[in-house]
Image 1 (tube, rainbow, N blue to C red):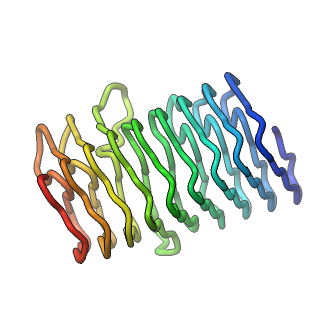
Image 2 (image 1 turned 45 degrees about the horizontal axis):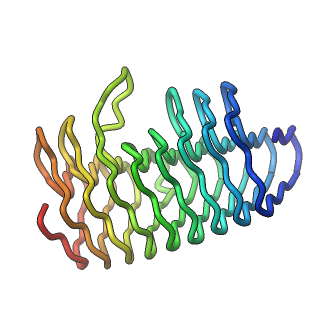
Length: 232
C-alpha cells in the first residue's frame, strides 16, 4: 500500500499482507504529508526491505495505530523491519499487538513518539533503535512483554543491544525476560545518552555475554530505577 504525497488514511480490518519486497515500506509506505494507518487485527508477515519492511513513515506527520494483529518474520537490510520512522512528527501506538521474529523491529528518530501498550515483542534481536538529538522524541512501554530477544552483530550495521537509546525512554509496567547481548554492553538496554526510567515492571533473566550491564549499560545520561531487575 503506497500513500502518495498528501493527506491519506488506510484502515486494515483483519486480512493479511505477506511476502512482499521493496526498498522502502514494502507493506505500507507513507510518503511525504500527513497520513494515518490503522491496523485492526490482521497480519503483515515475511516482508523484506532496506528500510521499513512492514511500515515506513516518510517525512511529514504520520501515525500508525496497531490494535491487535501481528507483524512477523519481516527483515530489514538496514533499519526498521517492523516500523521505520524517519525524522518527523510521527506517532506509533501498539495496543496489544504482536511483533515477532523481525531482525530490527522499530526505529525511532527525531520528533517521533512510540507507545507500546500491552502486547508482545519476541524473538527480535534488535527491538528498538532510538536516536534523538532534538529532545522531542519519546518511547514509552506500558504493560508490554518483551522476551527472547538476543542481539548479536552479524552484519555491517551495529544496533548495539536489544534496546538502544539516545533520548527519553520510560518503562512504566510490563516484563522484559530472557533477552541478551552477545556482542557488547547492555543485555537489554544500551543508554548512549538521555534518560532511561524503569518506573515499574520487571527485567529478569537477561545477560551481556561479552560486556557489562546484564540489564542496563549507561554510557552517559541518567537511569532511574523503581521497577525490578532480577537474575541479570
